[in-house]
Every structure is written in structure tokens, then in C-alpha cells.
Length: 463
Image 1 (cartoon, helix red, strand yellow):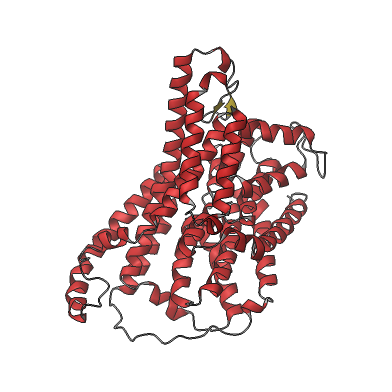
Image 2 (tube, rainbow, N blue to C red):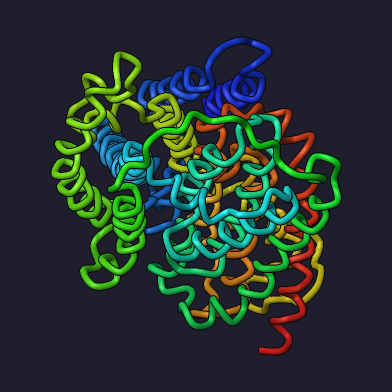
């Protein structure tokens, strides 16, 4: 039965990567493999020897001795647990995307566009690289990617050039999220699980993460696509909305306030995001009556006609296929995790991989195992792999192992477009092809990942 589930996941994964060849939207195989995997688990629950307790991060003892009803009840509880965790990410994403669309409704990103005085592709590349690195540490890599690609869409109209920028933004955002406890879901897991502290995370990972972003950006700046200047297209002279700057700063301020809200209240980030959305929506509704009365006279070509409420308009523009794809892929991976397949895979890596580099005494984990964890996070998903590592290893808080895991899982996902939340949302926003990313961006991400890993092996000997 486990073989059938793994085969279903592999076939679904292939269908996602071959989206453009099959001419089937990626959300369809994602939803199908999620539903089929869980259906097989429900129908063959008595045939499975193991069950992974996601809340406690370890394999359950004596699962095989439980009765059928007890196993079904456990499966339902596990499914609800994973749905809750996935819903936290999805609701957070919905809130962030809605705020971004509200800012766009008031033409807020034109304010930032005005700050970009240079037309040099190379300078813009570096500017967005550092923005992605810095913003992701503050507002997390997922939200930073949404914000920066939204700004990018206002500055660069050439899609071929824009998706190159988007690829480097993914690398920068994932690198920036690795050294901050709120920058990536995996570092947040390690932080909440008392495996790393924010101070040590910064000391160990800031330089490796910076190198992970700088090296690919430096190499990319010499590629032909980033030579010369961006072509300035003729745009219609639209009267600037007087609330654009206000809504931009209010919206970004609301997103930045989310980690502060989490620190003060200890509530999940999506609660803070909903609060930020509510506050931004209040001002949007107040300002929209003035905007509506002005734009109403602009004629039938007005984009906002029939959308008096900016919140309704913004919600209608959200990329729902990306949200459903996110739901499907995370819940499908949760099925593999629940059966202990990922846990056993991580254990087999630990047992069969030859020791390289510094030996970590208690678990006997080599640097190569952690590097393979980073590669695995690009292929599968970094969340369940880090969850499995929490149950596998018993090193104390702030041991170098946990920081290396945080780096590898956080930045390794950049090697494939569907290997990180930032990549998934960029794929949805720009319709980036899996194989295009594999051919053009993956090698840059790999070089950055390895350069940062080497830097980490050096910095850990100092501190």
C-alpha cells in the first residue's frame, strides 16, 4: 500500500512538472494526488505498520496493535492537524495577497516605481536581490516574494526578462528567510521547537545566507539577459491617485507588523495578518468613496467600474489556482509524512551516508546528510523534512546541527521552482514553467547553496 501511495505522489509530481506539455493546470494533479493518497490511507489503514505523530514529531509505538476504529480516529485527527497547519499558511497567504491587491487598487506600487530611477538591468537586479534578502527576514520569504513580484510587474513589462528577475528574487527571499526566526516556516519550526535561538541563528547564518544570495546574483549580473537597460514603454498618463502613497505604506506597514504581533501575543502569524488586512481594509473603504467618485467619470474603460469596494475587487483578483495548488501539494506531502515514509527516508540517509566533515557526536550525523536534506527540500518539501529531523536528532539547543539544518532546508528549496513557498507563489503569479526554471535558475541556486554551506562550515569553527 505504501508503494501505491509513493507511486501516486511521483506520478502527480511528474504531472505538475509537465504542466505545459500535458496542457493541464498544475492544481489538478496536486489536488488529485492529495485526495487519492488520503483515500488509500483510509481504505488500507489496517495494512500500515507505522504512523508518524506530527504533533510530537516521532513514530508512534505499537500502532499495529490498535483496533480499526482507533486507527480511523487517529487518521482523522492527523488529517485535521495537517489541514489546520496548511490552512494557517493558506489563510496567511490569502491575507498577504489581498493586502497587495488593495495596494495595487490604489496604484500604490507606482510610488516605489518612482524611486527606481535607474534603467540598468544589472542595478535593478542587485536592488531587488538585497530587497528580497532583507524583506524576507522581516515579513517572511513568502510575503516578500508576493510584494516584490507585484512591484516588478509595474516596473518591467517584458515577461521574459521579468521571470529572470523573479527567479533571482526566489533565491534572495529564501536566503534571507534562513537567518531569521520568522523568515521561513522551517526556521520558525526550529525556533518554536526550542532548537535554535534568534541570536545564535543570526550569528551562525547571516553570512552564509548573504553569500547564498550574493554569489548567484553576481554570476547572473554577467549573463546577457541582464546587460543593457530596460526599455521604457509608453504608458498612458493616468492621474496619480492621491491615496497611493498612503495605502502603500499602510499596507506594507500592516505586513511588517505581523511578526511584532506574533511576538507580543504568541498567536499564529495568520491572526496578525487578518488584523493587518482588517485595518488596511478599513482605510481602503474610507478612501474608495473618493476614488470612486473621481474614476467614475473616466468612462467605460475604467478598471474599477462595478467594484466600489476595494476589498471585493482585490479578492476577485487573487490567484486562487495557486492557493489550491498550495493546499494540494502540502496535504499530499502530509500523507507521506503521516505514514512515516519521510521519517524512514531521513533515517536511512543517516544510516547509509558516509561520514564527511565535522562529526556530530550523539546522532552521528554528517555534513553530507544535512546537505542532502537541503536537496530533498527542493524535491519534496522542507516542512516535513525538518519535522522529521526534529524527531530524529537529540542535539541540545543551538547545536551547530540545527543551524545547518535551518540553512539547508531554508535555502535548498530554491533549486526547484516548487521546492519552496516563495517559488510556488512566484510560479503562480508569473506562470513560470518548471523546466524553464530548472534550466535557467536551478544551477545558480545550487552554486549559491553550496557557497553558503562552505561559508557555514567556516563560521561554525569561529563561534
